[in-house]
Image 1: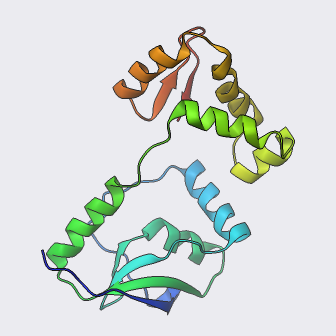
Image 2: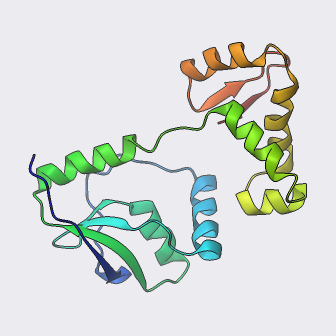
Length: 169
């Protein structure tokens, strides 16, 4: 696969074309959070498009920006083939990573020293009960070992070893 010379551009949203093969899905909750994030913080992550403005990576960011009324967005454009675009779409969807539940819980606890629970809930688009559930995990001595096994089994859902409560990570 050849290396491509990317260029950063500003492109009218109406000129972008979704690809027909993107396997990435997003829940309604996550999409609403993405729209809120773009509306409050701006369009921080450019999309990736080809020479014909077909979206290679960033479909949901493009759609969220479109739905909140933006007219232009930042994009990285490359000259490429459809086959390479499919590979880049797949790779872009897979390399985003996942949150470590213990580090996430610690980060939430630290954020509560800067913001009250209602502010934090609004800023990260997460219910206060879910935030507290994450933080409570830090108080369970046996959590760390058991949690790592649960996350390996299903990286989307974690289960508290003490009470059995399941939550998204």
